[in-house]
Length: 394
Image (cartoon, rainbow, N blue to C red):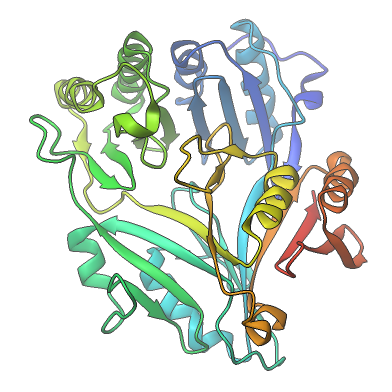
């Protein structure tokens, strides 16, 4: 590692209680070089490599300084305006009654204060909070969770219902669509990949050396193909992901045969001794029902800094760096006033750096939001139809 300079702290911000930095990078290969420098650091260092940069989350000043030194040695500059983190809050009169449902459906671990967290720290945390406010009607916000078929069948909490036969509800009526995933249309050489909306392969590695080599190989192959693969590096693990639907040509819009690329990446992983973990792939998105999809979608797009999915048939908005969950929208009957007026039992929290919080709140209000209340470091805002977002500083 390069010697740590005195000004490394300027690169970092506290987001959801975790020291987080984003370093701009010109390619996956350049980002993989930074990841390769960090895999030898002890402890829980989380690295997310994207085609435009690298997010790093660490648990100590020592690791933060080392990451900044490595980034600067590689010519990568930090952009402190990027870090943010979405989570989901479920309010219940009896949190203990609903928490096991969500832990099973999501495959999450228990965290502090009754929170449920993705063990890989990729998908949004789910926080269950006590509330005695009666809200008997269906929410206008639910989760879609996609897991490999065998896993989805194993964790299925009772008989599903709904138009697609995949909907389940917790004890309070909060809903989730638990969708079983298959493979990449039986494409040869892609058995390690699962089509959990996005195409995902999770590889366990025995040490930092093959982990570094796998990240480098996957980045090199993806750059050569011109495909913006997502590479998440965790202790003993590499997760390869396309993002929602982007393994399909209609979604990525590139001159890329993704199944062929997936086969090349799989071959490289196996040559390096990496082992696919077929239980780990997961996709989580938020789904909002709205009478005026255009207005609600515009609010969330502006407030979160998201961009359109790009396909005319979908109203999805996505994180441009694919670091936070997709938001999807569907239209509901404007005449269903009782359901539209009821406060949801589920809402979204947006954790941002303290020095960016006021700007996020201002953007939300400019986009048609209403400030409901505020307290120290927290602002509760409603979108044009009353769906709530809490902006949390630091």
